[in-house]
Length: 229
Image (tube, rainbow, N blue to C red; front, side, top):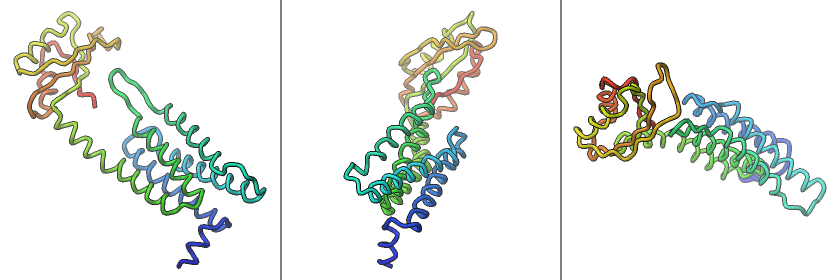
């Protein structure tokens, strides 16, 4: 067993294949989780990034061993991390008050690090890294969602009739004894030239957020309302 582990840690054809294979598997599994959540980057993107990072590290090791160079063998890995950072930044979208793509970008960057670990033959570190990333993206999502539901603060996007404005919304907030934290006009325009605003309130006590959104949607002046998370 020990000899097998040592053999896989060496630079040989079997080790190279295993590194790239695990990079595709680990990256693909993380990407599949993102795709199931309807994110743009999915199985193929993550698998390619992880495998590419692994190949870059393997190539770096090959150049170092083949040509007996004294240069820093981790230089190529640092370039991979920087490059994937730019790729991840392109996935982050700001839509009004809502930011999307942060988790996907962070997952992609971390998956590249797993690929580098696999490419260098650091199988234990890569496996632990894969496990942590997968758990974070899969199970912490549920914890985060639960925490958001229990929060006393609600940020909403509301479309209201322009001729009435936000007066009815503010009246509702006062009647419920909520605290109006902020109200900001959005440049976005929908059908019939409705007034679009972002409203943040402090409900002061635990109330189901869906209940509040439903009540606001029933107001005569409100055309549409949703919570931003």
